Length: 499
Ligand code: ACM
Image 1: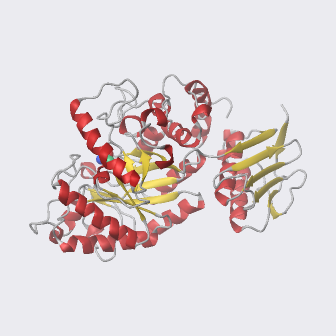
Image 2: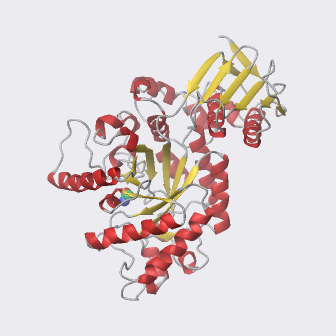
Image 3: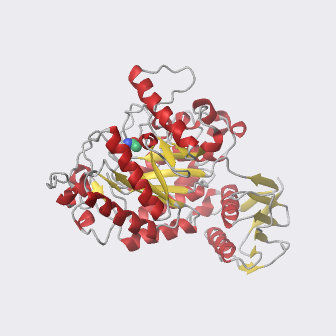
């Protein structure tokens, strides 16, 4: 086959003196440097040279959208062109996928770095392609979260939602409220020591994510899922009595005291501090599974919190229960309850009633200009077991094998929501049963690749039969990257001989 071969003598050129372009070029040079003796040189060049890889961010490329790129490989040169740094980064990630998995790790047996001759023009379907890590039920240290940011980048995913607080643990330092982390952050499910991110560590995560074109979406789950905060400050409780720390897995029992003005001063501090450290435009306020408030108390609370989030310059995101409140234009409803059966599925009466309330709220929210992120638990919750024999994970929303996550079309299931209101898709990983990084990775891989493609590729470009063979070929890369993944049945996993 015709190809271009990269060696240590292949310069990586960047056009236009763009610092972001240069950073991406350095990233690519380092990747190639894993395999060749000497890391290739990075240099400025407005036009591509023979024998070089040329990277060009050209805002005048109006033929390319904000995240799009074009790759052109001939036998004598390679060019990657985009209108934005994000698009260029994605183009470089595609070059990475075209190179052998050995490029990922210096100690892997080196293979020739050949790119097939051809042209690729590519752009995503949805702007929000996310993953959520529940670092509250079990805490993940900074380096583990960075590793997940790298996993997102490999598949051109661009939102990392961090579930930073829940009944079992408060995971981010708020200087004005030190007990949140000193007390509320010191345990997790099962009673093991938990942990938390200092403001400096959180800022470090935001910067790391920015460098991989991933936007962090911080979540402080209120008014329910707040036992860790309530245990840390008695005055946040309506009766002024702090409950014990909680290390179980029940839900629905806790709520902030919505009648107490102190609650809103507390939330003002929390939202201000975290918003100030967050480069992205979103702040997730949770809002799910509140069983101790009336509907009126709940919606009034959500609307007040939405005002605070807006005051600090962010767009409010919340789980789908928030749709019953008056939402602003730009707020985002994250659909999670499995209330949208696939075509032909049976629906129970209870589910139909809950779905009706949600549909009504959602219709009003969309009218007001809110958007929707799709995280249906029966397809995209990556903490659901793969099958009945899976040791980790839960199964309340069903079993979610990789085909269940991949093989459906958004418009078939969510056809009542206009596609223009669908911001994208996100796969949450809740951690009641996941203790350490490898547990999270085992639940994420291979399904993360299914979610990434669901968010990126147009429906007519997706089919299970084609995906499963491309998925199987990912196994060698995951092996080289040291990712412990599930070899789901029905996928022709590569055997490692081509590493
Ligand atoms: C949720 O799973 N409670 C959003």
